[in-house]
Image (cartoon, rainbow, N blue to C red):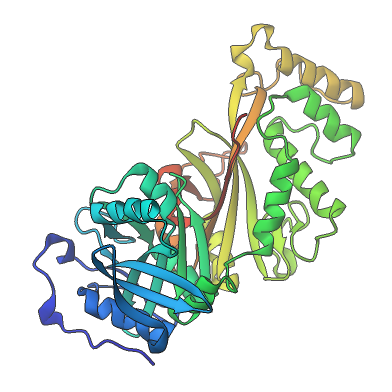
Length: 426
């Protein structure tokens, strides 16, 4: 086993190291402690050499610079590397980074001009106790933005996912691609035999490809579509969320993937037989998820009641929030509340005993929505406590207090993202 004995006396006086931050152990555990950074290039290269093989690694002079080179099966890699460390006060303790010097950009520009036959990677080296993780910050988008001793960020959850899965890929909100790799899998990752691909992500990509992204959806058209297909929630006032659930349920059935993911949104009411009242059951991997449709302008989206959610996490270790965000035209912004009136009249034409008048729900009715992006957040036993905040739900119609729910703050979502899709208009 590869292990660096950590000498606390070598802690820098830099402010970034005056406060403990989150650390991931090789047994998946989380603790708050000081960084154990491999500060010198020599120690970082020792770690790379240990896991890539001494006979494959060397320091070579290329274009006037001494660089770490990895050669295997006829391929040549230049690994430009920096230590991963906590950003320091006042940054959150889940956030770490490497510093990308402008010299990396200069070298890449020179390498392109010289047409050298090397695969150049930007690699961060994380070290804590016996846990080493390499993070490949895919260089293209970083180079487009420009490197000016700028930071490239990696989160606690990225490191946790690497330890658990071997390879974990995430696209951040700026379009950067970050690959976190368990050290013993780094050679296979570079060879392309371990990619971090996930069949569940592939299924969501397929669903997204056929979903109504970028189209304005008029309320009554979608209500009629759901009713025509016998969707049991066709008459609900919050039609956009129910339309999403209808399309997701139909997709899983039509594509015969119920063993992988199944809509169970109305199957488990009452928390009976040990089941939980969430929307999705990922059967093969044995965990739950929930679908959320959310106005893209809102800064947060409601989660689930706290007690049930915590119980579910403790039992199944992880949970996915699958959030679809849409632009919204409220019916109050349209003349004469067209969608409100048409909806109530349509329901009455199907259900003669429907007693609500034509203006029922007019203050909150959505006239149209246009879905623009989706995000999957993974909350697990290591990370879930920090992302959720109490949401005041008020009272039930009978005056009793509602169960406390969590509120998911969108500005904090990026650190828990495991998959994202953004519709790109032509």
